[in-house]
Length: 167
Image (cartoon, rainbow, N blue to C red; front, side):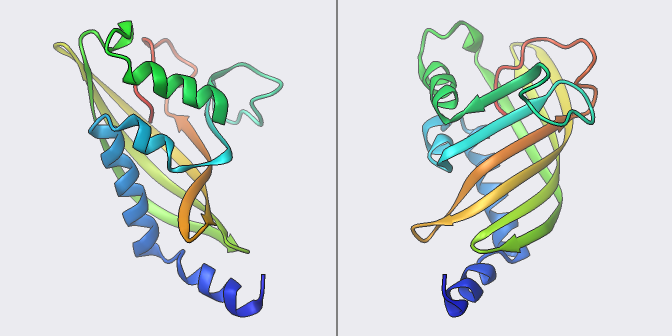
């Protein structure tokens, strides 16, 4: 990547642009637009929800969720299917993103940390999740895409019901 191109790419990773991108992702999740959400990811992406604080990797310990792009596609296909049992009754969510920080940006890729408060409703039951989220965002064909996403749930190691909608 030439220096001018690299500088242009880094300018795409300013705070307002990143926040807008994360807010857009949240809106796709909240409105159940699973296929559009899936299309935010790169072809080599992964989506990870560790099972406990400080978990170093998804390979040597069990995770709550660890999806590469193929298994993430399966998850999205299930969410889109009208007979998917986990959607009966339909799960509604509200993602609230805050404390967005740019951790690093180099060569068309950046690491971002944020906080998430997510409320989901299934029937009459409300659940509240809080998490620290990291994204690795990459410029690809002029678009920002998600190279990986890690969601560190507060209380992940404790008992909880099935995790239905993505964080």
